[in-house]
Image 1 (cartoon, rainbow, N blue to C red):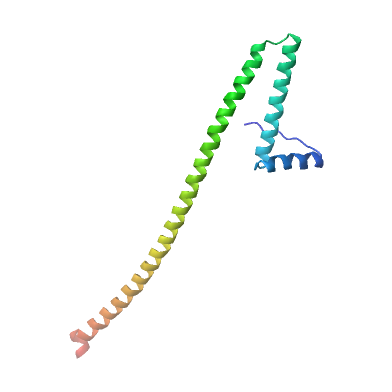
Image 2 (image 1 turned 135 degrees about the horizontal axis):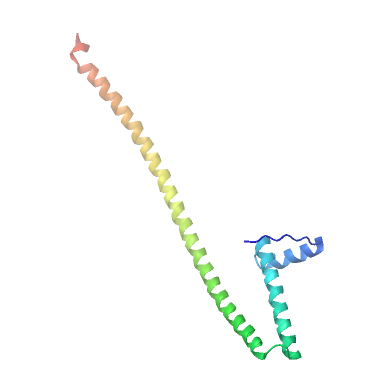
Length: 137
């Protein structure tokens, strides 16, 4: 992984933040999004200009279009997988909550049983003391 650091003026930062917040992206995702869009735009423009000038072949435009189609397909799959992951997380959170509630309930049962066990041990000890030959002498 390579880390890049850039500085931008406050107006630009506000515009960029508004762009990625509108898409539900955090700062890191937003920067990646904007950089990717910019790079794709530049690549597309260079290819189209190159074809017009005769320095690039029309096959390069076709390759860009195929890449766009491929990326759209991947994006659709990723969106669906994210949806599935969010649903699974929601189900896990619900079951986790139920397990925590059950655990709390069982801890309370254990606490009550321990108290009852202590009372019964004390009652047994008292009965043994009353019934033992040394206590009747």
